[in-house]
Image (cartoon, rainbow, N blue to C red; front, side, top):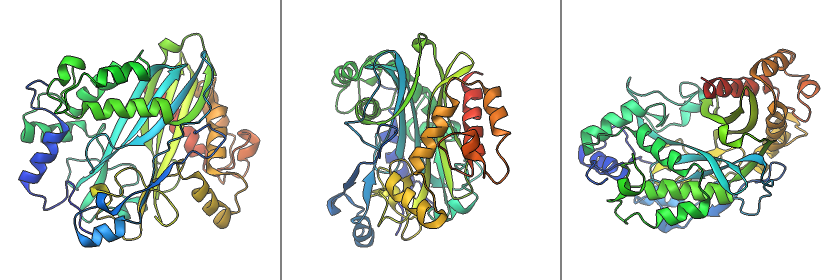
Length: 388
């Protein structure tokens, strides 16, 4: 399959069109953590890439974005996180959208977006991009996160669309705009943005993305139908500090994304997931796996969320390692374990896990991940980032 996304050989004209879609030229602008979280939707062939070859292949791809509209959420007074995977901007990328909530109120929103770019020294690949995970990338390309590549991506936005705002500045303006609002509040604001996004800055100060509506809608969707990770009861919900970071907690065939909310020096809530290339016959891909984002990757592979594909991934764990817990059950056990703990307390606990991880359950009740130390370290790293 041939990829058309920021890939070697793409024309300047085509790339200019991509960037123009991302921003204006500044001229106006865990499902419940104890149950399966996936929502898989078969996509029609009409939504696929234009070539006959990719259309035939992508027609078999399903999307698992984590939607769980009937997930149980805690009552007001207990913070919780909801996470969803979305396609807020075209068909060449996908986004991780996380919201921290108290009742119906959005306390914080975090968004990062991932796409393939031509491999050069200007870009930093996602963790394990230089390992086995990267073997599935389209030839000559790497998968990058826009947040940690904001400078490189923003330089392209400036060159091709005359943007004076960085990617990070606009996405931060959008997520800051969501703070303190409900999903219904955001829907009211979304309706004020013109179809062409020309008046974006009049509604969301500081954002110049013409696709601001898409990002705001993704936040609404996460707040109303995302997977759920229940946090702690707190009287300081409005004072939480947060960070979303990437890491490689488990081998070299996947990368992880964790979001941590800190109440002072203690963890109030976390959300953990991993992404890996898998067989599309059994796994639903991230959004746009059926579009341009899914083109060019290794044949017979689709990039998938482990949490949104909990049943399928857990079946592999059982077949290949005789796992007695699902991936979600172990991840949730780790999330529950760190709640109310400081970084020092988590590091002390991680130090009690032997190098082979055989005694994990003795330290983290309910978890059977032999790489539990890696997941705990990723949470520690996020906690340290949040409290900088």
